[in-house]
Image 1 (spheres, rainbow, N blue to C red):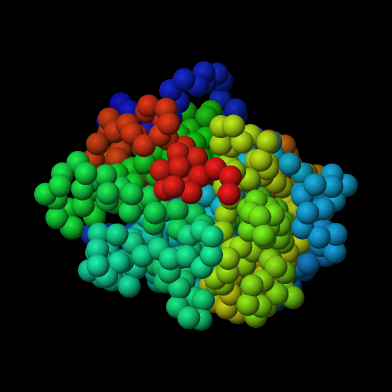
Image 2: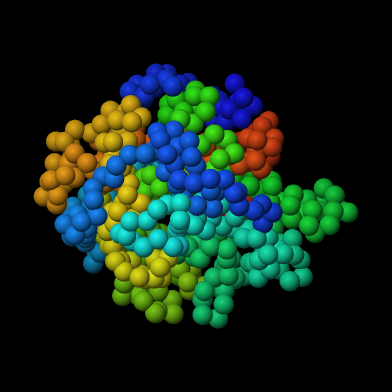
Length: 518
């Protein structure tokens, strides 16, 4: 086994892996963009997209042609009040939506995940993919659409182009450290007078929670700079910056492989993919690009968003701040009652013990929502500020479905057949017949992945197609990044956790100085 696979196999340490969860698969900024070739071709994707571009894993027909009838059917399927809407009673208020079981029928608990994993997944998405050029619902060749993020887990969404290329992100008196500001009790992102965050990726200020993760990363880096200087008082600023960036990125990658990915797909899926000498449909190490099939499937995280959250315990005169994730009536408010980003105010910070399970604070943590074919009602009327293009439609479900036409994505059934996974039966997708008869046997991939998780895993984790796509691409991205720990230092072990050779999100937050209840 190669040293890269040996390093990745560490994810299975201490886990007894029995038979695979499904057996249908045959055995089988200091870094510039890559210049390698184009869109995937053939089942192995032997001709890859450039690292700064999108590409295809599979050479398969689209699930449907972009006809007016298909577009209209997708719009109806993704509309508020349709079958994808969880029909939350928003008038009941954010506290009742959390505590009243009668109001959680459309948002069942996933006790295997804490609520923060939704936002970790969003943060990872923003670190590897950002489509700024394609037009929603208009067929686009992925090769001709740039990816504004490098397709690696390298935190370029945090670091930008480094102190030299993105000086606005860094302290003027200490170029090795990020700017971090505060508008109240706790830290905030640096902001312009308008409220706009001064960060490498504007999407990391869409909500208070994702902004809190971004701020935690900034603080973690600054702490790592301090450690580098303590270890070597003669180190210069450039070397301190690079040492801190490397250590933070490797700890972050370790958390992805050892905590986030196993929760999302299960250890059996990881064992199955690692048992193969190379990725089957994603490129060989060194040939990274962003597959459009993955970009669609990974949007399954939208199903895990709850209608409301307790943002913190002390933000309102020492009392908790409960809020809807989005409330369209709060547009333009100086201190909105929802959790939208783009605003500085004293109560707009995160008490992380609601979102992650800290020792001694287990009673604080709230579970995630299950993966299923229902999205929380606030996601059907997004603030335009939470949409990268700032243009309608405002239904997140509709946007996800129309994006299948943008990329000409194959159906979930076609991908299942290609990888040898058991496909969903037509009777398990019968509700789609009312929108377009074709969708029952040629289902939009995003909907298929959600239904598969709902049927095969009771919403606790992804099913065969969704799990395979995510695992293959996650591990492929790591193996394709020459600076990832699995390539540069395969025997790397984390040193910042409470337990030796372990590192979880709670460790990252504690290292940043923001962990626990607040």
